[in-house]
Length: 88
Image 1 (cartoon, rainbow, N blue to C red):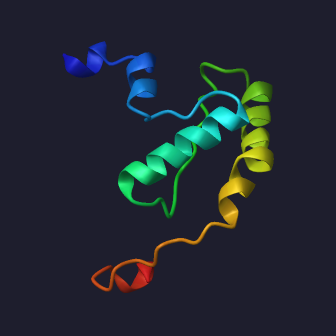
Image 2 (cartoon, helix red, strand yellow; image 1 turned 90 degrees about the vertical axis):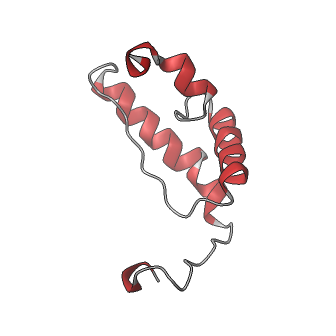
Image 3 (cartoon, rainbow, N blue to C red; image 1 turned 120 degrees about the horizontal axis):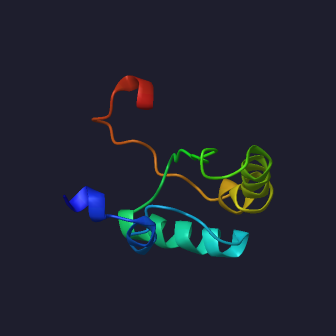
């Protein structure tokens, strides 16, 4: 029942979706990064069933050009020694 009532605004409030201008998205990622103690990897999803393909592609290109480079120079935290060898 709770999942059925969980809408886009709830997901945005909980910082589970990153939408907005490049500056908005950078800020949301920075806040999420601080809240969880660092992000090493993230996966992007652009839903083409709610967004035309050309706009979805534009969004991904905009992310690659104006959001991702902001984080590329930041150091990442190495995986803990207890992590599987493939993650180290």
